[in-house]
Length: 342
Image (tube, rainbow, N blue to C red):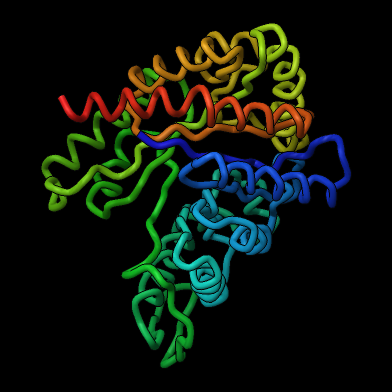
């Protein structure tokens, strides 16, 4: 069992410069607290994501942390030039001494991809960029002829620290993607209620058990949850409810602007989201018990916590990190170790 952090970098109430500085301070706290990795979303033209150039922010993360692993979740590969992306990946892995976690994907929002002139061909573009990048991470020269990009004898003067490449991550929304992911040792992360997540994690284990890596440790099977921990349930709810509402407004911003139904299943009402286990909010005992239930019900071995979102004050996020470090993670990790030893 591991704990990580997921960050949309959605707009808060402070200036952008202050928000970036606050987030870097938080990332240092995640590092000190022993979180496994920090995962950053990529979005464009929306208050849902101010880290529209994730490599830029992650370069700062690489220099402000020592043990924390980090990476995009995911690079929206359909809108990238593969050579530029390949070089950025190598730089980040080198700058961090081999701590990059590489999230790959097409991108979830056709609106955002459309800003870059990518439409119905998004999947084909993503696959081609992905294949070029993965080939380039293991080569000293890039040769490729495709539908969108072609390269001939392009020298690759920079390589990643991690071989053959940094660990791969993918956002899994359905059980049918698990065969592809398990065959390539790809870590997965998903959203949604525990029952829906369980269908995905169960299928991943089935595919893993009958694949070529069955005797190796299982990759990370993760889920995202909003997390706020405070002295009492009431205090935590008072902090989290308005922050969730602002985050939800940012989540729907582009879809409402274009009058398109959003393809995500998050309740607008915070208390409904909390009751569904999507928001783990309360005092230490409340959150600890809720995490235990979610981990068991969803069949995960990796819990990604959204520790900063909406107008949640920086001090509240730091308090949650502190209480997670002292009171919650040690207990759950100890129980996980005991379960494995039985």
